[in-house]
Length: 193
Image (cartoon, rainbow, N blue to C red; front, side):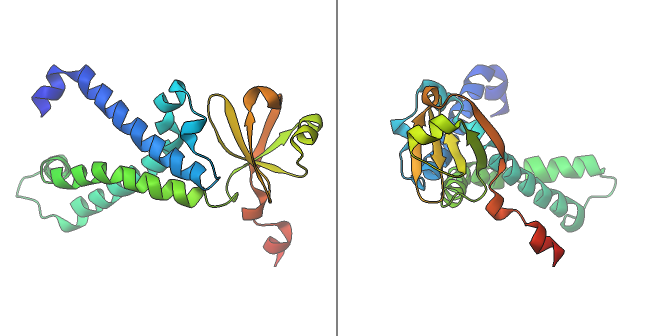
């Protein structure tokens, strides 16, 4: 395997990029499924190529947790041979003896992306609060705060407490992202108690 990676790095990078894009599309599909639309109806080629960026924080968090578990295993559970350095033990445990575990992690990423997208797409909690021009809000027929569910190259997926709106980016004009949904942040009254 190492020889193939060394001999054909372009093919390997392309396959990894393709795999991560599929994982990102799975994440985005299930995220927007909770919104009530299919991402494939509103996506263009660029959206497919950068889909994994939407799931990147989730993927990095998952890999970080997995890495912490492996380091804990190296430090506390693995016995080391006499004269073996910590670096040699890390290499033996993380690379040589964990090939199956790493393969299963890579195979499970689409399942985890599906679950994360499904969980995040269930409600407006945790999505960014956005301010749009008053004239645009009237044209859309919405009042009150709007939350940015997701975006594609040409569309914005906005929501308020009662409705979901798909809007072309060109129709919105100026858009100001002002932070996370306030319903999940503690209020001053709650923190005073």
